[in-house]
Amino acid sequence: MQIRVPHIAREVIERNPRFSLAVRDDIERLAASIEEGAPLPAPRAPALDLQEWRRAHAEHADETWLSTQWFHAEFAFYREIVRRCRFWEMGIDPFAPAKEEELATERLWERLGAALVRRGSREQRLAGLLDDSLWANRVDLSYAVAASRARADEDLIADDRAVAVPWLARAGARIHLVADNTGTELALDLALVDAILEAPDTTVTVHLKMEPVFVSDAMPRDLWTLVDRMHAHPGDARRLADRLRTASDVGRLSLAPDPFWTGPRFLWQAPPHVLAALESATIAVIKGDANYRRVVGDALWPATAAFATACTYLRAPIVALRTMKSDPVLGLPVGTPERLDAEDPRWRIDGRRGVIQASVPGP
Image (cartoon, helix red, strand yellow):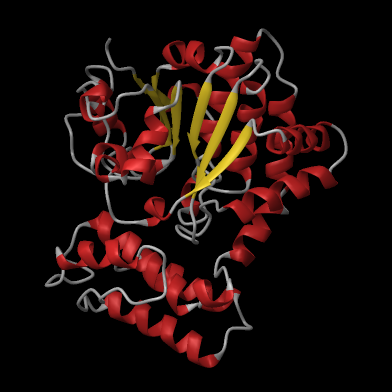
């Protein structure tokens, strides 16, 4: 909070030279206040979730940027950035320049191209696309240290694809995917969505943010911008874009943006309509580190406890795909945490390792 987060705020200033002096000064004051450990600011209008933020702030009203829960502080920071950049008044995404740079990288199109030519049975392709989707989570514009890492087999430290794939492959399944980053990650997510939609009568709902957060997290406008860029590429990427547009037109692909995903609450505290949507799923795919933290309460569980231990409040199967950029983790094989502690003290936070973890409720 004292180093990385103010740096993100100042990058917004640098990447948006058209911002007025008043906006630039407002963002700089935010960065300085975080560095100094100033009191958390009270939420202000406009926003769709103002009342929920006021309730959450009341629980932390006497705390500072540097003495509150990290989960709350991170989301409060991004809410302040969005407000100061006039997103709700003028539609300005302060992270648009960074997102645009990511869309222009060869990395995105090379990785998407490789994913789209996977061969084998549908189940084999789904397993491979889950892997592609997982490692694309390293491409997080709020945490660039992870993006340049090469994939290695030993970096996958929990792998429940054998549990998840049969649920994803069901004909007539209702799949929900809680998205994380746009750009490379969302492109690989959409390749997975496309493979899921091959089954007759299957539907996919993609849950998205309603406002900018964590620099590269995806909103509906980001998804359709990406699909438009796919369509501008010849070959497999263009055909993927066409299939996604058709699926949207006929109602098999739906988008579900909601302010909950940029709020400070954990998943068991979600509004009834969000929980009901996820619990209506044949299986829900939960993407990314912040969403994993939201599922498990951002808590330091025993690392070898079953992942399902933290998901007992959910009445539907889920599979979480996450490269590790924070401490909480469950579901690791016995002995793995101790081995990794000895090999690399930063293994929980450096974005190198990844997990694919399923929780399937009993009958």
